[in-house]
Image 1 (tube, rainbow over the protein chains, first blue to last red):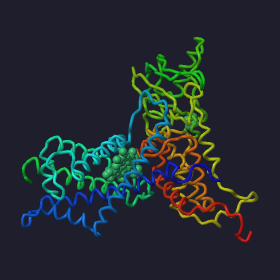
Image 2 (cartoon, rainbow over the protein chains, first blue to last red):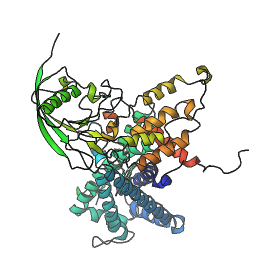
Image 3 (cartoon, protein in one colour):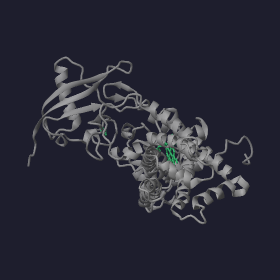
Length: 224
Length: 263
Ligand code: HEM
Ligand code: FES
């Protein structure tokens, strides 16, 4: 007998979509953070390392590289949000009447706020693209002048503040997300279960630490 | 040695006439409750009093009263089966409470577990999940020699741990998403770990998960509340095993052949 709606219609199927797209997004976030560390490199002959890096990304594979990356990320983000919405609707419907009292013993802030942190991150992604890719949030944006755009952007306190808030949301999201994704993919064994939390914590601290350092470096005048 | 004490308690209990009616909380006094009583005995005392007064007793499910049948479903002070770890409501003793406490008692809350009356919910959804695949197909006749099917000690232990599930539904009740994945994964695992479960291993996980979804349980977001609430300590490692099997089942699934197979 095979009932139900097939893999993508099923709860576990959607969870697996969520986990695999989550890995893609986390991979992107890690590489993105490492690339941006070039904010701290000195300029060469008046050309900032970040600008050279931007040029490199835009011309990779004769300019098709960046579009391949953008298309994959858009697909991953789209599927991730699609699965999140589907699962959230199932979960809402599963408990139409709640408890008067509910005590939590195992869940965490991160696990209970996944939907909210996800929406904050989504809003941030849109803002971030408008700000630094399309360039229509702040006056004075210049295409190709990555260093200039980042620094003048972060000099605006509310831009930095929103960026930092979004990074806090992202940190709770990936901290629960990494362990959740390993569990969803069936990677559980007493021999390495301890490492799962370690990996989640390490990646979260490295990614978010790196990312938050950028606006702080600009606001304190360390990078200008 | 008697550390027995008497407690004066207040109960805040969900009362609901039948599946159709609205329901709401009612407060009851429970004076002179011995700390030696079990939680269900305390409810019996309160019910005696209600019956003498001509009121409707509080309806709750119970059967074995020794922690093995899983019938005694109720959320006590915000936790399925109450505050004590690895303990069913029937095995919970009143010494876990203090004089003057107000105790909130609610039914399991899930769309798949409709309230029938007061604290009693209909858990037939679990039975339908089992019927969808939680069994092995074995020929009748005399049992074969046990030693002809080798089972590793580790797998035997893990299968026994999974089989400790009494199907009480506390995992669903505790889960913020009302997901039944701990229950289903225990039932999938106890067979997936043993040789007898192998022939139907992958079709079983597909069918049971499909039934679980059809019953409108929620989905696991790995909060871990189920494991913390489970009176039998079923591990979420079973959920990972089920996810793994489901992924493999989806990748290797073939619709039933209409020909071939030398048949
Ligand atoms: C850079 C962006 C993002 C990354 C790196 C990321 C990463 C992850 C990962 C790894 C998971 C765990 C997968 C699993 O459930 O097993 C996850 C789950 C989830 N994500 Fe994201 N995500 C991102 C953006 C978003 C966005 C934009 C939303 C929604 C608008 C979202 C909503 C969710 C939800 C609701 C879950 C499931 C919660 C749970 O399993 O507890 N995520 N995410
Ligand atoms: S009445 Fe059987 S487990 Fe509680």
